[in-house]
Length: 477
Image (cartoon, rainbow, N blue to C red):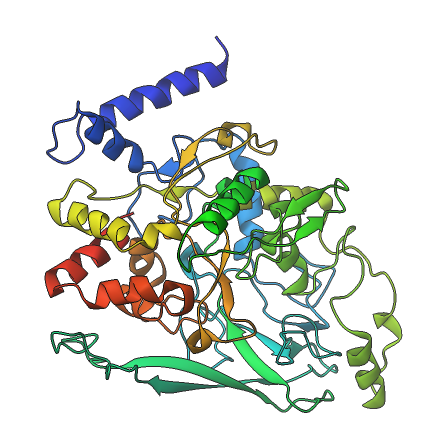
């Protein structure tokens, strides 16, 4: 018998055993079978039952080459240096961060900071853009704020200001309870604005600076396995519905690795289509400016190089293809790790309060954008991810979130909710939303404007215990 067959039989047995001991529920009815199924957020081959501080760092059951996984993990955790002749060498000459993990503490999302220069835990990236969202000429898409001497970065940093926001209800629920009741932050909501520090580049009138936060990386291989056609089906379903929920799909992107068109579904604005040319694949190059065979040129603009020359700095070595600083084999291992990160299993779904929260989640039409489940398509990179039912709670479409959430754009891809309740354990914070303005689940819901305002009002008008139940469900999936 093939190893894969033995593995599948073992996993099926695990499912049956798990279904027989979920909470105190009596398994056997169709409802209970669905409940057991929903615990497997990443499907049978993509879920781990781990609630520790390492819950986002685990290889999925589908990963067989642990050596490749661990080698790829080393590049995620490693700190890069400028000397190109040593391990993890080649940093710069201009760059954003020295490591991946500094932006993804605990392998999760970054945390809110007041000081953009904070290294570990700060996963903010900044954009210097015009009102229409286009990047100001001379800047890379993501602002670089560091450089190896004698070079000078485009800007030395970003000044972040946290502003108070008061909604039309005075930050109170209809029953008079203030938002964040009982917390030190009671009655408050906040949002950031940003400005450049010591910028050396030319800035046109009307430019803006916006910040966005990194998105969690666990489970992205499973999202990659969702077929483009399935996302288009969801898009068309929403367009045919009554009401304001009208998600927009990402652009069709012709990928160089296969010459085919793929649908954009990664990043806050669906600007990347596949993990093979996705956020991590590119970030390993662009964040630290580590060159490789398929990315031989520096991640820098012609205008920045010209500015260095104007400053009297020798720019001879900055032009044209550079020496590869990351091998193709190491890049392959990095992608085994990236695709192979498992999703933590859902928790406490049989709890009556969680079940009440689930009912409210559907009643409030939260599931219209946070689509609970998908069935993956055929996935060549990890075949065991193919044809699995997963529960990420995202429609992978972009929605208009209103003027209140205007940044570079005002449309954002629906973020997956799986595993969010474990962020505090894994990353020591509960910050959420596109720029981490939401300090907890309650605030994340209260920042839902635009297309999501009806769901926001549904939540606001619930009784206190129902609001708590809905949040409890979000923290359990």
